[in-house]
Image (tube, rainbow, N blue to C red; front, side, top):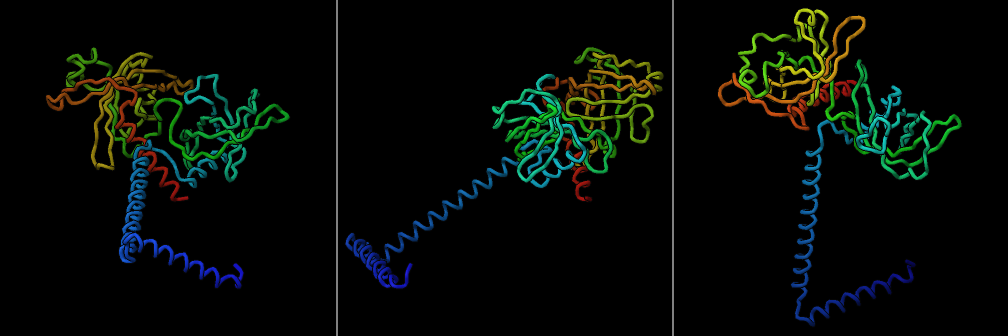
Length: 357
């Protein structure tokens, strides 16, 4: 505003305020009452804003509490995971389906990590179309934390296709938006992780003594000695390779197979007793599970047997003393307490490794 116009503007503002005051006076409202009304309105507006902010805070906390265990939301942490995947040339399986069939997905690797985008190198010759841009893809990547051996952990995330380009050699470059969340999850229903051996106190295995739910299956004392035992101090007979809410993978030595006569043929059922330590509760926990053999693989050199089992039932106290079990079929969530335990222990180990970096 130019200086020459300032006095006129002030006079106009004062005239306007005087007019407003006169009109309110004409309605019988005194200046004091007007100020009181304005103060009341301001207080109500402030209270409304406070309630709105509190609702936002409560909603945010509820959403975070409802997130699955193993979810990563911090942008910096997501970027670290993707950077590790790129440096390891980790395979990233992508598809348009949440649960792809064998022929519905393609494999790729991270070629470039930008500020707001992720560039994937798809070596397969596929017929890509510009109509893909804007569509959501589902991605699975196996990432190995620093200084850890083994196959690593599988992470799932979604992203939108922001661009694509076919290369001269027939390969494809896909540009994706950076994911806003990543979580520990494999293509299978339950995430299998290396067990924290310092918290795995033991494992006992019996062939199924009889029909599930019968008297013999309900009375552990009638089963005799376990056919196979595992404890951390002695791993020459059986080793726990990985654990999930849905099952386990065991490495059974040739000696154990010869001594016990167990075959572990697909379809056979065994009772497993797993004893674990829960540092959250500072207590031991015993889990009784009925397990069915899903697959077996014999190592050509060692003749050891790698056995994959899935849980079909869980043995719970029947209320008739500690020596009686009632078997309950396992649903889609598997043995949830075991799944939560192994994921939490794994995350603790991962966070310790990240803090040392």
